[in-house]
Length: 67
Image (tube, rainbow, N blue to C red; front, top):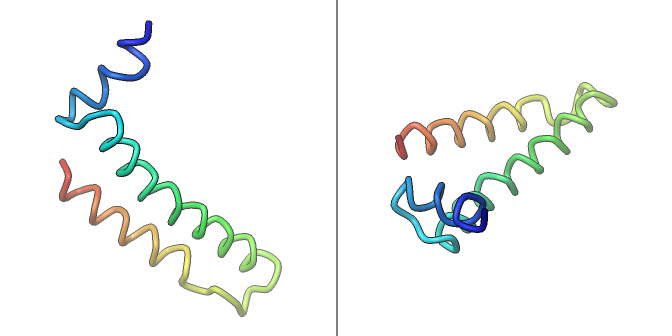
């Protein structure tokens, strides 16, 4: 169970647990920022008009390079 939960997937992308954690967090934190910007935009449409979509585009480009 430990192997499946903590080791198998990072190994499948040639990373250690901590390397994979760092990469995952480097996606998670900008996604949280994008979610916050989208919430602000939902309430006040004149703010953060492109913030969330710009962040998602940048992350998508990074993800495509990893594949």
